[in-house]
Amino acid sequence: MKLSVFLKKLKTRFLQLFTKSNWNLIVELIRFEFKVADRNSILGILWSFLGPLAMLTVMYFIFRTRFGQGIRAYPLYLLLGIVCVSFFVTVTTYMLKIFFLNRDTVLNSTVPRESIILSNLSIHSYKFIIELAFCFLLGIFYGLFTWKLILLLLPLLVAYLGLVLGTSLLLSLFYCFARDIEHIWMIASRILFFVTPIFYTLDRISPLARKIVYWGNPLTPFLISFRQVFMGELNLPNYIYSLFLGSGFFIIGYYVFIVLENIALERA
Amino acid sequence: MNDFCVKAEKLSKLFLVFKSKKTTLQALKAMLSREALKKELWALYDVSFEIKKSEKLALVGKNGAGKTTLLRILTGIYDKTSGDIVVKDNPRALFRFWTGLNRDLSVIDNIYLFGAMYGMDRNFLKDKLDDILKMSELYHLQFVPLNKLSAGQAQRLSLSIFFQSKSNFFIFDESLAFVDQSFAQKCEAYFKELSSSDKTVIMTSHDNRLLRKYCNRAIWLDEGRISMFGEAKRVINEYEHSFHYL
Image 1 (cartoon, rainbow over the protein chains, first blue to last red):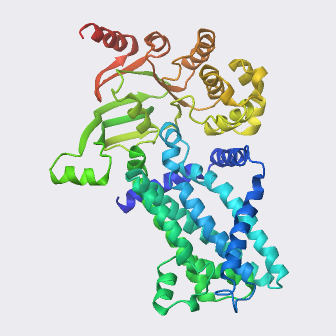
Image 2: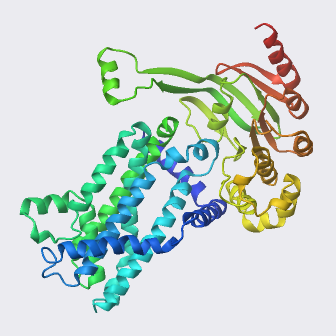
Image 3: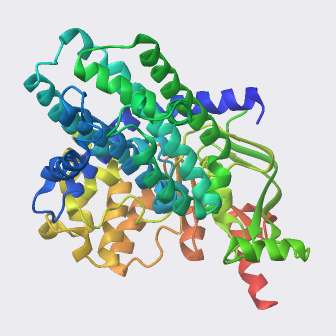
């Protein structure tokens, strides 16, 4: 696609997206997402705590002596890893089929596709923020909380959403062409739990593995930044690298989405 | 004066229809044996027309003639493959009545959700709530989830909401198929009012009586090409006569 065509398309999209009626639509879609999210569930939003808590308990008892030695506030360290990686995996897996499941809406209405994506992301983001609030309380409990660092959380959260959205867009488009993506992503998600430093620190692994885990896995810099923000110490270059990564993934994902969306949706 | 609402020149739309292969291995095998895996399907070919503002246009043609594809290009849902199209007004299109309705939500919630999809906000809909519920005859079922309603009731609901939306350009794609007689009368009242307004309307329907009554111009599409374009009654008559030669 020529740059001029792309920019024209982008302008049309933005004009459509930032209208009062579209924001009204997004609000209604989000309202509906929240209404049906925990339908027929007995514990409802409590599952947001119970899932990570169960994982935390199991991982803490298994890994605390082998990997947890010398790590300050290891339960918080573990919980942040579980929460961040689970959010990434849950959203990307869910969004993988977004166009396929919403095929009827995207092909039979003029609703901006971004509005559907945003509304679907809302409920997961809400649960993620609740889980992070729990981490925040744990940070206070361990005496690690600092206001100065918590101010850096917002840009980091936005960048992380950019990473999640960018990856989700790419996956959902590729899924329209090949259903194999679902299987590949299922395997990749399982591997992610081990190639992301959820229960170990980078200095516990070999130099080669460290390079691969840091430079080959975009979740690692984010996880390090989240931990630094919540646990009171900051490595600025890593934090800035995370912001670049999130923006980069989002820009690439959105660009590919604009270029391929119609071809992909015709095949969904 | 250029008072057109839609102008299309040599508009074409190509779909690549891929032959279904169950696995990648089967697809590879087919590729090695030089079996064609895709087929070209021109849903629209060299279509040129102009719709003036406030015109009421009927789009007729057999199933698969390209009517819905043309409407989807008009609304920006599909990209054209070649040619040019200019759409001056933002169309408000109703393709399938169930698109935008949610089975798990109540009738009231669906009014707000479906209404938002067609540019109506909560305050506007709150004022119109009584009208919508009365027209759809669902007053007594307003808190019932949609999955407890019949398909006909859901259609009544979606049409009653859609009829409240404001626009200068409306598109109806087979929207009145399956409505019962009593509701059809209410729909006719709406179309009667619409036909005398200055709004631009494009309608597809297999009910030619309805098209004759409310449209002044028509396009007959046949296998993606324009067979005839002109005064509605004449085009629809010719289209109907074509059945007798089959």
